[in-house]
Amino acid sequence: MRLAKITERLSGLGSEKWAVHIEGRRRAALGEPLIFLSIGEPDAPPPAAILDEAEKQMRAGRIRYAEGRGEANARRALARVYTRQTGRAIHENQFIYLPGTQTALYAAMMTVCDMGDEVLMADPYYATYEGVIAAAGGVTVPVRVDPDHGFHLKAADLEKYITPKSRVLLMNTPSNPTGAVFTRSEIEKIGRLCEKHDLWIISDEVYATLTYGNTVFSSPFDVQELEKRTIVVSSISKSHAIPGFRSGWIAASAEFCDRCIPVTETMLFGSQPFIEDALAFALDNHFPELDAMKRDYEARARALVAALKGSAKVSARMPEGGMFIMVDVRKTGLSGEAFAHRLLEEEGVVTMPGESFGAGGSGHLRVALTVDEAQITEACKRIVRLAEKI
Ligand SMILES: Cc1ncc(COP(=O)(O)O)c(C=O)c1O
Image (cartoon, rainbow, N blue to C red):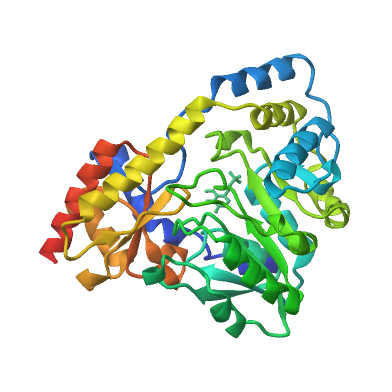
């Protein structure tokens, strides 16, 4: 029987990106001892108090249908966070609670992107973006960013790709896979372009709390003039190491939220009240174990950079934020894909080829900072050994 066109638009956008990881999993199941650096799932447990709060609220009967835009306590907690962050009064009607950043991204894209509209984004980009844009019928317009300039998107490069069909800039800060974090001044420059060409900005900020060194996180939502065209999508999946809670949100203008709610309500008919209570609790409290988790990610990234330092063939720059680091293998003459396959085959290390995140990731591996320092250091030894052999 005939299926809808969306199935054609989405087919083939997924599996080959994961070929190295899937092969690694197959071998691991057969007993091969491998080091997995491919998946960005927090290895630290979430704060136990958040689980306790969810359980307490579930047992207290918070399992009925929730308000469509999200429970008031969750939206009020979000309003407190964003009022602090932006320095302006952000109201609870500027949020929609959704099960995770991915769902929020889908709902946001469906609300602003029509068939044939062009969506610009820095390349390399997060693996699901092409699918989200294709689902809405949009056209992906990747804008290559330069690895030798820390993978930062330049306004001048972006402008070259803007056409009358451009509708949305999809940005991600801190970035998965590159670790780049937009500075306030970059956001202001890019924001002026978005104003000039009347573009929406969807800003994926799922790694907002994970920045390293002197890096300061900034959002287009922080810039008052950009508030009305900015749609932030985020969650506590990474910040609180709790992806299975599927606990996220949209932050935008009240007008945008009012128009987006019919989209989210037709998808979901509300979320789980006890999980929303746990979100409010997570946002209203400070958990020292999350500071330790962040310090661990940073220490692992520094260990990786140090471990590759002596090599003439491979190198890595310290990420400014996020949970990943890009390893540059261009000097070996191999693509990221070829290197990643050989690394699995010859050294038992599973990474993601940079090309899985767009042509802009060519000649790189994406390494997740979600294993301990000893494993990272051992993996680096093997990466260097392979590189020297090539
Ligand atoms: C850039 C980016 N956006 C969104 C997501 C999905 O996040 P969530 O668990 O909140 O849906 C991820 C998960 O890895 C991600 O890396």
